[in-house]
Length: 523
Ligand code: TNX
Image 1 (spheres, rainbow, N blue to C red):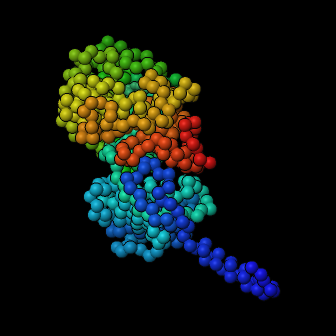
Image 2 (cartoon, helix red, strand yellow):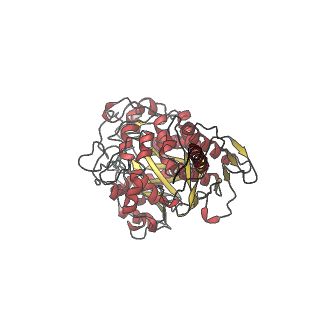
Image 3 (tube, rainbow, N blue to C red):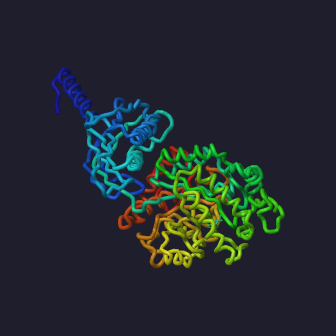
């Protein structure tokens, strides 16, 4: 190009700059199919463009469903800190004007169930549809991951806040996707439990199992047996001060979880794992003697006195109080590793405790050993170790919650150099924590009799959430994908790359993750 004079040069550059301003307003081309989403959605159709959240973007909700409004508020709270935008919430019965986000419970797509969602992203609008607010909430987690990782920051960031365009249709493989936190071996504060809830919510899990009692500590206030918290709550592994949740604190945890469409299942482990109970109330010990408070990590040495009527009065009181403050349908009765209880005593004990739980209006969940007893209707056996017990449960037509220690235990070390974790079941690197399938473990254990999967985090070796994060991340996202995504869509070679691209999110959130060499961590 040749310019003959300054006027021409100026004219050229001013037209060019005008063009550039206009083109900056043009949506950035983006590929929805190449986003690093975990868990991987059921189907993605990319349309090659993008939507941008801007300072005047509002979140519109259709109708006045209270739960839907809650999800809109949650979305606004997720987006406000980093964008610095007001993201007002408004009501609209028709699709809003261009530039906005629309949440609607009018999906008319039965396949989505209660947790599925459809996300339609165009240059003009983001429309998130579901059959229930729980589906909208799960879809919001997808939306979060479609935004730059800096959206997770607590302070204002520069943006731009672009979301690749296209359509995602998504729903879970299993109806139950859980994680367990052992607050008994080491106590975790209410705030730490809430952080854990936020982590599991971001990967679309829907159940938090709280292991509230064990040899080393009792963690829930029971008004009719106050020494449980006073004495039983005063210890933990390693001799720390322990702690317990008051009933009000427990309700606060439940409400926080419910706002994230997560159900809490409390566990009172019995008849074994009960040293903290016996130290609080020695009359529940067959010897009547008060045992020493226990701060080690052995298992299988304690038992409630199964032949003493007082034991069942105790259990009745505890279950009654717990049932009254637990909205979920299940109570977990433990039942594992009862090496100090004879089988002839264990079986009638488990049978009787199931009746007590039913009397207080709840259903029973227990570790796989309970299948040695007669499982009552709707009792769930949690398979963690024994195939034989899983088979016994299946023979009784019980459903199984799948938590095989050597695949899914979050407390197993990664390898011999791991600073936290145990390794009695296995060393579990990221590949082996991802490459297994719930339906390929036990003969006859298939989708029809699998309730879902759960990742237990036992806390013998971790004393706070920062340490726990090192075991949780980066394995939990893979478990979430096993529970949510269709089996045939999963491949380790592709997954490890997607996981590596979550690094920026872990960093912004300040997560203390294990930087496995198996993963190509993206800078
Ligand atoms: C086995 S899993 C246990 C727990 C331990 C865990 C440590 C299960 C039902 N019982 O008491 O904390 O191993 O990995």
